[in-house]
Length: 253
Ligand SMILES: [Zn+2]
Image 1 (tube, rainbow, N blue to C red):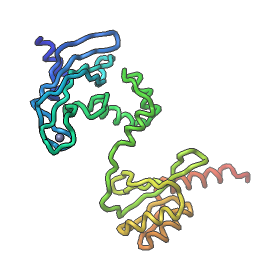
Image 2 (tube, rainbow, N blue to C red):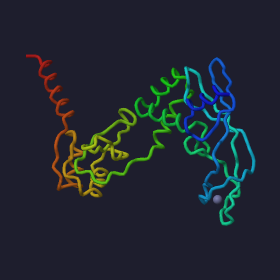
Image 3 (tube, rainbow, N blue to C red):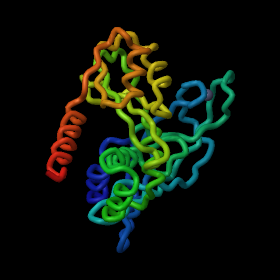
């Protein structure tokens, strides 16, 4: 039993569950766990309850260990909400640091997969996950990215703008970047001057627009942010310079 307690401390530190058993397979570690929380908050009204309505089995996938998938088989509790004014009579207990409603992964695994998706995107991320003993697909990784909250920028005095291909050669969109933080602040569905101008009109704080030399962003900035100075960004300057050198080198004398 002492070893089991130490295993819980190692794999699930401080998350409010106890490990009651371990099953070891060639490719999988199964942990039988139960909640050790005194009470849980009703998602409808916030009242805390410790009155158990029933128990049921809930399965969660956790981060892999030593190349093996980790499955938590949790003895989960459905609790009774005692608030007479609440629309819910019962609710499924969530362990705040471990589970979310309807999730079949632990919070820690979801965080890990989101990080992988952020660094590698869908397809490469899914390939890496296969090597790490995590079963997932590119669509799941992309869903995690889309579920991330988009930070609302308070003020973007220095704005970068560029196009990117949604479908190469067919559909293009516009990405807007805060040049101070180097973080994207918004995405526009197309790359027209009208869309860019409309966005700029709602952001009168823009003082500098850093853009490529395409006409649509120039026109959009002139109409939507006449107060802003327009500058060429370093990447496009170097790109244009490289193209000019290449043309010069290949022009027959
Ligand atoms: Zn309630």
